[in-house]
Structure formats: structure tokens, C-alpha cells
Length: 599
Image 1 (cartoon, helix red, strand yellow):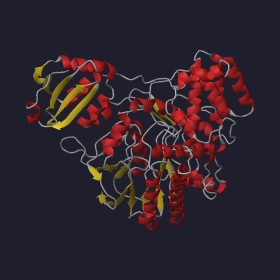
Image 2: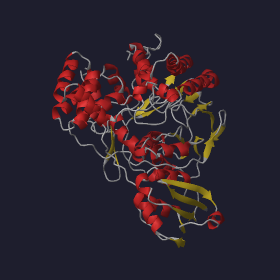
Image 3: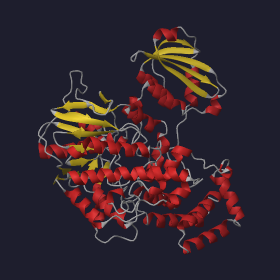
């Protein structure tokens, strides 16, 4: 990890304050039941000028910048409101829009843009859409613009592995950590996520190609699609009238993630760099201001060109040099341990590892090309963690000897290996309080020294759980809005991954369902412990096939049945309804608080 230059940091501080108009005072946002969903006041401790020993100096200074909140002027605009990204929750997006209207007048929302398919950019949409003029049938008639594939990726990422991602996101963003100098101070990209109500609305205008031009309320927008970069569906936007460029989340004021620690598909660093270069070619000479969905803008044509070029070079260097060393026979861990960025890039503030790190990004690039396996046969069929831990601890002479050895590594300053040894102790003997306490202290020391916000939060969250502190309900566990947005194919796919396969092996049947309100049918086949589905079928296709059970129902009825097991009124019923009852009994609910630091 490197130190950002003081001049760079000073410029970022100036840019983060430029154009300030107003702020929420106090910045505490509540839901309809008066629960706090965002509390920016809890970060006031960051105003302390003396940086505590429990925080990395660079991360503390970045935390001070991202904790700034309020309304800022980037360029002049005189007409309606086009909302670019909608925050995570409806409560926060409504509060933000209310602040805007307080200072700029009570204007209508005339358009909504989702730059990409992550929930913190669309979850608050119903908090802003209420200010849009409704059509006669009550739905919105304004353009809701998103890159092609947005809805598919938005729901699939949050549904298929949503439970595991939400659990790990609690670690990554430090949900349950106290906001204080020895607790959660930042995520680097932002302070943390809000809780509250996450919503989604299907786009009605897809951006399908680079160069596509759309005009909303007299504002011309030229789009650049960038799939496979920070999100599978993402796009940048150029506003020629304002000489302003929105870079979505493709160019932020820190190194981003090639693989996010909460879990997601590995991103394409080569494509990311290539699209940044395309942005430079298409827009840089015409741009006086660039802004993104996180952090503060950059002003000035020369500064913008340099900023985008440095971001481009960062991802290109990470990709190319990792691949070069792969071909020299190094594995991901070996590459990450000795990877050094170019000298000119090392001090640049907007390239620091506040959110992504060189270490875990290099490993992600290795994984993308070479999978999890490094080619060493000894790693091909290893024991799982608890079984391995028992054997390692036994070889070290037992639990007490392993603890004694770990203490010697702590004294020598090798906290990394001490954590490895103590992790074996805890997994071999989870009731050993001395081992858990010592590992918690080791994690805390590693967290306090980390420049990376998510790393700090992971270390401190692990320490907290080892000390026996309760974890709250996952903030992203309510998937009701996401489920409503799923296509029939996606909905059935999401149920298939919840099927208890070993128990399902005892059953073999078919179910034909026709959803009258969608004019779409599906055929479910339970076979060899797998739930196979065929969606997009017409009524006659279903009627021409034999099934053990068939009926007509609505989409909402199907959703209720698949998520709760409750079957509402159906029509045209034939065959054995017991097939539905058996299917429901095989669909599992996931444990939202499964163990991470304990076996």
C-alpha cells in the first residue's frame, strides 16, 4: 500500500467542497416507522484533526471526504429534474430530492437514469418517482433509462446468491460496527450503505449501443455502454450542452474492485481499461467537468484527461502484468505479494486502495483466467477448514502449543501468520476462549492498520463476532421488491437453487402452470434431485403435454406459493395437488447469519 501525495489530497479536498449549496442538518433519515435508516451525524468524530492510532492515516482522510453530505452545484441547469442513480433506499433518495427542491424549487422529475445494475444505484427509485407526473393508469410516463441487460443483472446478482452476499456485505461495510475511531470509519467508496426500503422499477428505455443519443426535457445525452466493467450492465453519459461527462462507477477517486469482497462475478480489468480509453477518445476533449456516482467531480479539461488516463493505465497495468506473471508460472498469491504499481501512479490519490486493493484485485484477475486452482496437486483435494485445522493443530503439538507459537509471531510483528495459526486454533477448538480472544485482537490490529475500508471492516467484524457480539439482521435480506421484478425464468431459477437436492431425489413428477395475467406458461420437472423448468410456453403447448399436476394461476399467486408455501385460489386444476405440497416442502429458507469466523 502506498501513500497518496499531499498535493493530490489537497486538490481532492478542494474539489469535494466546490459548489456546496446546502446540507441536511441534522443528517438523520428515518423510515415510516421512525427507524433510523441513515445517520451521517455518527461520522462527526472524523472532524478530529488528530488521527488516532486505531486508523490508517490515508483511510481516515478519505473517510473525512466521503462523509461530506449535501447539495452541490456541478454545472448550471434550468429545467426539470433528471435523476442519475437513486441511492440505496427510498427514504434517503426522497430526503435528497427534498433538499434539492428546497433550494431549487418544486420541480417535477422528468427522467430517471440507472447507470448500472447495483442496488445502491437503483434501490431508492420509488423515493424519487413520486415527483414524476403520472400517466392516466397511474404508472410513470417518464423515461426510465438503463443499459441493456440492466434488469436481468440487477435481480440475478441479488437473488441467486443474495443471502451469502448479504451476509458478507455485513462484514464488508461494517453494518454492526460502532461508528468511532476504533470501529467503522468508512468503506473508501462511501461511508457505508443505508438501510431502509430497496425498490426497483423496470426501465422503459434501453441503451443498446455506444453513440446512442436520447433527449429528455431538452437535455441531449450521448451514451457509452461499458459492459463487464464495474458491473455487467453499465454505461457512461456525455452531456454536450454542459460539456459534462458522467463516468458512472468506472472512474472513481480510488482503486475499485476487480472482485468485490462481498461476492460477485469477477470483473474484466482489460475491458475496464479499454472502455476508459474509449471514453478519452470520445469525450475528453469536449469535457470540462466529469463526475461519477460516488465521490466528487473533477474540473478542467487537462485535469480530466490526466485523471481518466491514470485510471485507464491503472487497470491495464494490473491486468497485463498479472497475466505476464501467470505465464511465468506464478500463482495468484505469489503475484499479489510482490506486485508493485508504476512509480508515477503510486502517489496519485485517486488510485489509492481505499476500496479495492492491488492484492485482492491481482488474485481476482488470476481467478478469472486460471480458476481457483493453482496447478499444485496438493491443493486439488484439500480437507475443508475445520478438518484441516484439527490436523494442523495436532501437528503443532496441540492447541496450547499452537497458541504459544502464534504469540511469538505476534511479538515479532508477523500478524498475518499469527492470524493464520489462530484461525486453525479456532476452527479446531471453537470453544477455546483464549484462542478466540487472541485472534480477535490480531484481527483488530490488522484492521487498524489497513488503508482499505472493506479490509478494515472485515477484520473488525470478524473480531466482533469472535468476542461474542450479536450480529443484526442483514440489511439486504428483504428481497420482496427484487422477486416481483423477476421474469418467470429468473423466478424459477431462483427457486431451483433453494431446492434440497438430496431430499428431492426421492420424488419424480411434472407440473404445468399457466399464468393467466402474463399469458405465459411453464413446465416444472422434478428429476434426479434437480428442478428443471421450461418457461415462455403458450397455453396450447401446455394443454398438449401430460403432467402429474396442472392449473391456472396468477403471477402473484405463484410468487406467494414459492416464497411462503401458501397456495391461493387456482383454476382449471387437474391431477395431484400433492405435487405442489411436496415441492414446497423441498424449498429451503437460508440462514441469514451463517458462521464466517467460526466453524
